[in-house]
Image (cartoon, rainbow, N blue to C red; front, side, top):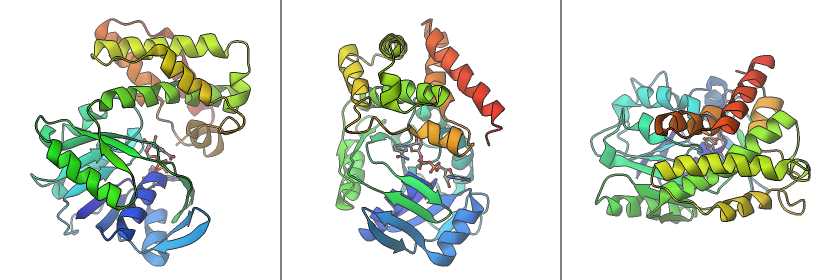
Length: 313
Ligand code: NAD
């Protein structure tokens, strides 16, 4: 299958490497020239579960695709949320009438952006539990296991979703077709919408925040805003189960000592965050549905304030 990985950072590199290793015809499209040059000159390097791996996959700058002759069967979107619109504009001449577009970004509401460029029937929405880290231009770290849930937006397109899931599973990416992807997306957004912003602003790992006397009520307030907006979209989640999943992040024996990815982006790397597509998306949708979202709004403002203070790019 001809596959474009659109956004070849940590996660795009993971999917690119694993799909290439499974024999798929993969290209990478990205906006970071130093990373693209490194991949084209020396290969895409990964520490893959402790083993050093190099894969030679052609990488192209998204602003220079006019001469690229590649008819994509599948595009996997893995930009950061704020880069998505630009990436889709750049891909315009690669998107044929049968090209399937799978979105695996974190956050809520990406379908509203994608459907400006892609026929609704060709869009798959997904959610992944795989992880990956960027070491520097041309180099990523890939540890552990994961899975992908995905669903067709177009009615009667389950066969298309199944075909894509089969291609991913053949590359050991453990994909399955879901019948309620919005529930999974909202559930993951609740975890990101509490751990990411709070630990970033508080300069804390997840366990230390979880141990504070106010962690429980803050988490409960934020989750209740997410779930109220979800309900307005006919997506129903069990609040207790969501909070239990978040409490799992506080466990020092498992992942509690880690800082969430937003902390890495903003505090360590001075990069802009995806807050507008997590808590910020809840604020926007809340206004639309008449749902008050004061905690999400305040957290979004605090993160933007921090982005300005550290001059994040
Ligand atoms: P990433 O930041 O590694 O890459 C996203 C884009 O930013 C890529 O185009 C990359 O080339 C570019 N980029 C990265 N570092 C850069 C730098 N220093 N200078 C300039 N450009 C740079 O993002 P990611 O972690 O691959 O995440 C992609 C999407 O997947 C996001 O929506 C994220 O929330 C989601 N996600 C990430 C993980 C994870 O473990 N990383 C897990 C699940 C979902």
